[in-house]
Length: 344
Image (cartoon, rainbow, N blue to C red; front, side, top):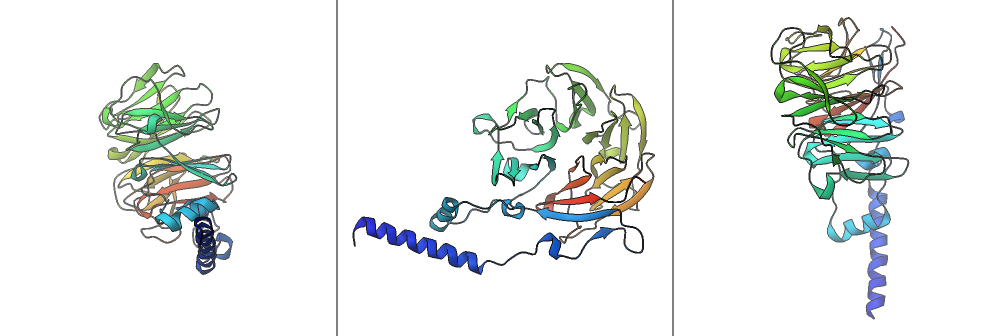
Protein backbone atom coordinates (compact mmCIF):
# COMPACT_ATOMS: atom_id res chain seq x y z
CA UNK A 1 0.00 0.00 0.00
CA UNK A 2 1.37 3.41 -0.96
CA UNK A 3 1.69 6.17 1.61
CA UNK A 4 -1.15 8.13 -0.04
CA UNK A 5 -3.40 5.06 -0.01
CA UNK A 6 -2.56 4.46 3.63
CA UNK A 7 -3.56 8.01 4.50
CA UNK A 8 -6.83 7.60 2.59
CA UNK A 9 -7.55 4.40 4.50
CA UNK A 10 -6.90 6.12 7.82
CA UNK A 11 -9.22 8.98 6.85
CA UNK A 12 -12.00 6.58 5.84
CA UNK A 13 -11.59 4.73 9.13
CA UNK A 14 -11.86 7.94 11.11
CA UNK A 15 -14.95 8.98 9.18
CA UNK A 16 -16.57 5.63 9.93
CA UNK A 17 -15.63 5.97 13.59
CA UNK A 18 -17.20 9.41 13.71
CA UNK A 19 -20.38 8.00 12.26
CA UNK A 20 -20.45 5.16 14.78
CA UNK A 21 -19.76 7.49 17.70
CA UNK A 22 -22.48 9.85 16.59
CA UNK A 23 -24.95 7.01 16.22
CA UNK A 24 -24.17 5.69 19.70
CA UNK A 25 -24.30 9.06 21.48
CA UNK A 26 -27.27 9.53 23.80
CA UNK A 27 -29.84 12.05 22.64
CA UNK A 28 -30.51 14.62 25.38
CA UNK A 29 -34.04 15.71 26.06
CA UNK A 30 -34.90 19.03 24.47
CA UNK A 31 -36.34 21.64 26.82
CA UNK A 32 -39.77 21.31 25.22
CA UNK A 33 -39.75 17.54 25.86
CA UNK A 34 -39.36 17.99 29.63
CA UNK A 35 -42.14 18.77 32.07
CA UNK A 36 -42.77 22.49 32.56
CA UNK A 37 -41.17 23.90 35.69
CA UNK A 38 -42.71 27.03 37.22
CA UNK A 39 -42.76 28.97 40.47
CA UNK A 40 -44.71 29.27 42.72
CA UNK A 41 -46.36 25.87 42.91
CA UNK A 42 -49.97 25.37 41.85
CA UNK A 43 -52.65 26.45 42.53
CA UNK A 44 -50.88 29.84 42.68
CA UNK A 45 -50.53 31.63 39.34
CA UNK A 46 -47.07 31.03 37.85
CA UNK A 47 -44.61 33.91 37.93
CA UNK A 48 -41.28 32.35 36.89
CA UNK A 49 -40.71 29.57 34.37
CA UNK A 50 -37.58 27.54 33.70
CA UNK A 51 -36.42 27.88 30.08
CA UNK A 52 -33.17 25.94 29.66
CA UNK A 53 -29.64 25.43 30.95
CA UNK A 54 -26.25 25.12 29.29
CA UNK A 55 -22.73 24.09 30.19
CA UNK A 56 -21.17 23.38 26.80
CA UNK A 57 -21.34 24.89 23.32
CA UNK A 58 -23.40 21.98 21.99
CA UNK A 59 -26.06 22.69 24.64
CA UNK A 60 -26.72 25.86 22.61
CA UNK A 61 -26.61 24.06 19.27
CA UNK A 62 -22.98 25.00 18.56
CA UNK A 63 -21.62 21.86 16.93
CA UNK A 64 -17.99 20.92 16.54
CA UNK A 65 -16.76 21.14 12.99
CA UNK A 66 -15.45 18.15 11.06
CA UNK A 67 -11.79 18.91 11.64
CA UNK A 68 -12.35 19.49 15.36
CA UNK A 69 -13.96 16.07 15.66
CA UNK A 70 -11.24 14.51 13.54
CA UNK A 71 -8.59 16.04 15.77
CA UNK A 72 -10.29 14.69 18.89
CA UNK A 73 -10.16 11.16 17.50
CA UNK A 74 -6.45 11.51 16.82
CA UNK A 75 -5.34 13.52 19.85
CA UNK A 76 -8.12 12.85 22.37
CA UNK A 77 -11.25 14.75 23.26
CA UNK A 78 -11.01 18.17 24.90
CA UNK A 79 -13.94 18.93 27.19
CA UNK A 80 -14.99 22.50 26.42
CA UNK A 81 -17.39 23.59 29.12
CA UNK A 82 -18.05 26.11 31.84
CA UNK A 83 -15.87 25.47 34.87
CA UNK A 84 -16.76 28.12 37.47
CA UNK A 85 -19.08 30.69 35.90
CA UNK A 86 -19.36 33.86 37.95
CA UNK A 87 -21.16 36.34 35.69
CA UNK A 88 -23.28 36.16 32.56
CA UNK A 89 -24.56 38.60 29.95
CA UNK A 90 -26.67 38.15 26.81
CA UNK A 91 -27.12 40.51 23.86
CA UNK A 92 -28.59 39.94 20.39
CA UNK A 93 -28.37 36.18 20.72
CA UNK A 94 -24.75 36.18 21.92
CA UNK A 95 -24.00 35.02 25.47
CA UNK A 96 -20.89 35.96 27.44
CA UNK A 97 -19.90 34.07 30.60
CA UNK A 98 -17.09 35.19 32.91
CA UNK A 99 -15.34 32.02 34.08
CA UNK A 100 -12.39 32.24 36.52
CA UNK A 101 -12.05 28.45 36.30
CA UNK A 102 -11.23 28.79 32.60
CA UNK A 103 -9.19 32.02 33.07
CA UNK A 104 -11.28 33.91 30.56
CA UNK A 105 -14.67 34.93 29.21
CA UNK A 106 -16.68 32.52 27.06
CA UNK A 107 -18.46 33.95 24.03
CA UNK A 108 -21.24 31.72 22.71
CA UNK A 109 -22.67 32.63 19.30
CA UNK A 110 -25.36 30.04 18.51
CA UNK A 111 -26.50 31.64 15.24
CA UNK A 112 -22.96 31.69 13.87
CA UNK A 113 -22.14 28.30 15.38
CA UNK A 114 -19.12 29.67 17.21
CA UNK A 115 -17.65 29.48 20.69
CA UNK A 116 -14.49 31.24 21.86
CA UNK A 117 -12.71 31.65 25.17
CA UNK A 118 -11.49 35.23 25.28
CA UNK A 119 -8.47 36.26 27.34
CA UNK A 120 -6.41 39.44 27.54
CA UNK A 121 -4.32 40.94 24.77
CA UNK A 122 -1.24 38.89 24.00
CA UNK A 123 -2.83 35.75 25.40
CA UNK A 124 -2.67 37.03 28.98
CA UNK A 125 -4.96 34.96 31.19
CA UNK A 126 -7.84 36.51 33.10
CA UNK A 127 -7.48 34.79 36.48
CA UNK A 128 -10.57 36.27 38.11
CA UNK A 129 -13.18 37.72 35.72
CA UNK A 130 -16.20 38.31 37.95
CA UNK A 131 -18.31 41.14 36.48
CA UNK A 132 -19.78 41.92 33.06
CA UNK A 133 -21.62 44.94 31.66
CA UNK A 134 -22.96 45.80 28.20
CA UNK A 135 -22.09 49.08 26.50
CA UNK A 136 -23.97 51.15 23.94
CA UNK A 137 -22.09 49.81 20.91
CA UNK A 138 -22.28 46.12 21.86
CA UNK A 139 -18.98 46.17 23.71
CA UNK A 140 -18.72 44.12 26.89
CA UNK A 141 -16.88 45.41 29.95
CA UNK A 142 -15.17 42.89 32.23
CA UNK A 143 -13.78 43.28 35.74
CA UNK A 144 -10.91 41.07 36.80
CA UNK A 145 -10.57 41.28 40.58
CA UNK A 146 -7.15 39.64 40.76
CA UNK A 147 -5.60 41.77 38.04
CA UNK A 148 -7.44 44.80 39.51
CA UNK A 149 -8.43 45.85 36.01
CA UNK A 150 -11.44 46.69 33.89
CA UNK A 151 -11.20 45.37 30.34
CA UNK A 152 -13.38 45.73 27.26
CA UNK A 153 -14.32 43.19 24.59
CA UNK A 154 -15.32 45.10 21.48
CA UNK A 155 -17.63 43.59 18.83
CA UNK A 156 -15.67 41.12 16.74
CA UNK A 157 -12.59 41.29 18.97
CA UNK A 158 -10.75 38.11 19.83
CA UNK A 159 -9.35 39.37 23.13
CA UNK A 160 -10.12 41.71 26.02
CA UNK A 161 -8.24 45.01 26.18
CA UNK A 162 -7.44 46.65 29.52
CA UNK A 163 -8.79 50.17 30.08
CA UNK A 164 -6.54 52.90 31.45
CA UNK A 165 -8.48 53.70 34.62
CA UNK A 166 -7.25 54.99 37.99
CA UNK A 167 -6.00 52.19 40.23
CA UNK A 168 -8.48 50.13 42.26
CA UNK A 169 -7.96 47.47 44.91
CA UNK A 170 -10.49 44.83 43.87
CA UNK A 171 -12.96 45.73 41.12
CA UNK A 172 -15.91 43.34 41.00
CA UNK A 173 -19.37 44.63 40.10
CA UNK A 174 -19.74 46.79 37.00
CA UNK A 175 -22.59 48.65 35.32
CA UNK A 176 -22.75 50.87 32.24
CA UNK A 177 -24.95 53.96 32.10
CA UNK A 178 -26.32 54.15 28.56
CA UNK A 179 -27.47 57.74 29.02
CA UNK A 180 -24.07 59.16 30.04
CA UNK A 181 -21.51 56.54 29.01
CA UNK A 182 -20.25 56.38 32.59
CA UNK A 183 -18.99 53.16 34.12
CA UNK A 184 -19.93 52.27 37.71
CA UNK A 185 -17.42 49.89 39.30
CA UNK A 186 -17.70 48.37 42.78
CA UNK A 187 -14.27 48.30 44.41
CA UNK A 188 -14.83 45.55 46.97
CA UNK A 189 -11.52 45.99 48.74
CA UNK A 190 -12.04 49.76 49.13
CA UNK A 191 -15.73 49.43 50.15
CA UNK A 192 -16.91 52.00 47.62
CA UNK A 193 -18.32 52.52 44.14
CA UNK A 194 -16.25 54.43 41.56
CA UNK A 195 -17.86 56.24 38.64
CA UNK A 196 -15.68 56.76 35.55
CA UNK A 197 -16.32 59.08 32.63
CA UNK A 198 -16.10 57.78 29.05
CA UNK A 199 -12.54 59.15 28.83
CA UNK A 200 -11.50 56.99 31.81
CA UNK A 201 -11.18 59.76 34.37
CA UNK A 202 -12.84 59.42 37.76
CA UNK A 203 -16.06 61.43 37.88
CA UNK A 204 -16.77 60.71 41.55
CA UNK A 205 -16.87 57.91 44.11
CA UNK A 206 -19.17 57.16 47.01
CA UNK A 207 -19.20 54.89 50.02
CA UNK A 208 -16.81 53.85 52.75
CA UNK A 209 -16.60 50.92 55.14
CA UNK A 210 -19.41 50.78 57.66
CA UNK A 211 -22.99 49.70 58.21
CA UNK A 212 -24.78 53.06 58.12
CA UNK A 213 -26.85 54.04 55.09
CA UNK A 214 -24.61 54.68 52.11
CA UNK A 215 -21.73 52.72 53.66
CA UNK A 216 -20.56 49.29 52.51
CA UNK A 217 -19.03 46.13 53.88
CA UNK A 218 -17.49 44.36 50.88
CA UNK A 219 -19.87 45.38 48.07
CA UNK A 220 -19.91 42.97 45.15
CA UNK A 221 -22.04 42.89 42.00
CA UNK A 222 -24.20 45.84 40.97
CA UNK A 223 -27.03 46.67 38.55
CA UNK A 224 -28.20 49.92 36.94
CA UNK A 225 -31.78 50.00 35.69
CA UNK A 226 -33.07 52.21 32.83
CA UNK A 227 -34.49 54.72 35.31
CA UNK A 228 -31.01 55.31 36.73
CA UNK A 229 -31.40 53.41 40.02
CA UNK A 230 -28.17 51.71 41.03
CA UNK A 231 -28.55 48.51 43.08
CA UNK A 232 -25.51 47.46 45.11
CA UNK A 233 -25.07 44.05 46.71
CA UNK A 234 -23.71 45.09 50.11
CA UNK A 235 -22.65 41.55 50.87
CA UNK A 236 -21.44 41.54 54.46
CA UNK A 237 -24.08 44.02 55.55
CA UNK A 238 -26.51 41.41 54.17
CA UNK A 239 -28.57 43.95 52.26
CA UNK A 240 -29.22 45.61 48.92
CA UNK A 241 -28.73 49.37 48.78
CA UNK A 242 -30.20 51.62 46.10
CA UNK A 243 -28.76 54.94 44.88
CA UNK A 244 -29.45 57.41 42.10
CA UNK A 245 -27.02 58.11 39.28
CA UNK A 246 -25.24 60.69 41.39
CA UNK A 247 -24.60 58.25 44.22
CA UNK A 248 -27.32 59.65 46.46
CA UNK A 249 -28.72 57.03 48.83
CA UNK A 250 -32.36 56.11 48.16
CA UNK A 251 -33.25 53.05 50.23
CA UNK A 252 -32.16 49.57 51.26
CA UNK A 253 -33.60 46.23 52.29
CA UNK A 254 -32.39 42.92 53.66
CA UNK A 255 -31.14 41.37 56.85
CA UNK A 256 -29.03 38.40 57.84
CA UNK A 257 -30.92 35.16 58.49
CA UNK A 258 -31.93 31.83 57.05
CA UNK A 259 -35.63 32.55 56.59
CA UNK A 260 -37.51 33.47 53.41
CA UNK A 261 -36.40 36.91 52.30
CA UNK A 262 -33.34 36.90 54.59
CA UNK A 263 -29.76 36.98 53.33
CA UNK A 264 -26.87 34.70 54.16
CA UNK A 265 -24.43 35.41 51.34
CA UNK A 266 -25.97 37.77 48.76
CA UNK A 267 -23.82 37.73 45.63
CA UNK A 268 -25.61 39.72 42.93
CA UNK A 269 -28.68 41.73 42.10
CA UNK A 270 -30.73 42.67 39.02
CA UNK A 271 -34.14 44.15 38.18
CA UNK A 272 -36.69 43.29 35.48
CA UNK A 273 -38.85 45.60 33.38
CA UNK A 274 -41.61 45.54 36.02
CA UNK A 275 -39.34 46.75 38.81
CA UNK A 276 -38.98 43.41 40.57
CA UNK A 277 -35.60 43.03 42.26
CA UNK A 278 -33.81 39.67 42.04
CA UNK A 279 -31.15 38.74 44.58
CA UNK A 280 -28.88 35.71 44.11
CA UNK A 281 -27.87 34.27 47.48
CA UNK A 282 -25.07 31.71 47.26
CA UNK A 283 -25.67 30.00 50.60
CA UNK A 284 -29.45 30.03 50.29
CA UNK A 285 -28.90 28.36 46.89
CA UNK A 286 -31.81 30.45 45.67
CA UNK A 287 -32.96 33.36 43.59
CA UNK A 288 -35.10 35.61 45.81
CA UNK A 289 -37.49 38.18 44.35
CA UNK A 290 -38.62 41.42 46.00
CA UNK A 291 -40.73 44.39 45.00
CA UNK A 292 -39.29 47.87 44.65
CA UNK A 293 -40.04 48.56 48.32
CA UNK A 294 -37.96 45.54 49.35
CA UNK A 295 -40.92 43.34 50.28
CA UNK A 296 -40.24 39.64 49.76
CA UNK A 297 -42.32 38.04 46.99
CA UNK A 298 -40.95 34.66 45.94
CA UNK A 299 -37.99 32.27 46.04
CA UNK A 300 -36.82 30.18 43.12
CA UNK A 301 -34.64 27.14 43.67
CA UNK A 302 -32.99 25.11 46.40
CA UNK A 303 -29.67 23.32 46.73
CA UNK A 304 -29.06 20.59 44.14
CA UNK A 305 -28.12 19.88 40.56
CA UNK A 306 -31.49 19.43 38.87
CA UNK A 307 -33.29 22.05 36.81
CA UNK A 308 -34.13 25.05 38.94
CA UNK A 309 -31.70 24.01 41.70
CA UNK A 310 -28.43 25.76 42.51
CA UNK A 311 -25.04 25.16 44.05
CA UNK A 312 -23.33 28.40 45.09
CA UNK A 313 -24.91 30.58 42.40
CA UNK A 314 -23.15 33.85 41.65
CA UNK A 315 -24.06 36.34 38.91
CA UNK A 316 -27.39 37.31 37.34
CA UNK A 317 -28.40 39.13 34.16
CA UNK A 318 -31.89 40.09 32.96
CA UNK A 319 -32.41 41.13 29.34
CA UNK A 320 -35.01 43.44 27.82
CA UNK A 321 -37.41 40.50 27.38
CA UNK A 322 -37.20 39.58 31.07
CA UNK A 323 -35.14 36.49 30.36
CA UNK A 324 -33.21 35.76 33.57
CA UNK A 325 -29.71 34.27 33.32
CA UNK A 326 -28.10 32.88 36.49
CA UNK A 327 -24.47 31.75 36.74
CA UNK A 328 -24.89 28.51 38.70
CA UNK A 329 -21.24 28.44 39.66
CA UNK A 330 -20.54 25.06 41.26
CA UNK A 331 -23.02 23.25 39.01
CA UNK A 332 -20.81 24.54 36.15
CA UNK A 333 -23.71 25.90 34.16
CA UNK A 334 -25.94 28.85 33.37
CA UNK A 335 -29.65 28.47 33.98
CA UNK A 336 -32.19 30.58 32.10
CA UNK A 337 -35.62 31.54 33.43
CA UNK A 338 -38.36 33.90 32.30
CA UNK A 339 -40.65 36.18 34.26
CA UNK A 340 -44.19 35.39 33.07
CA UNK A 341 -46.28 36.97 35.80
CA UNK A 342 -47.27 40.28 34.25
CA UNK A 343 -46.77 43.75 35.73
CA UNK A 344 -47.78 42.99 39.34
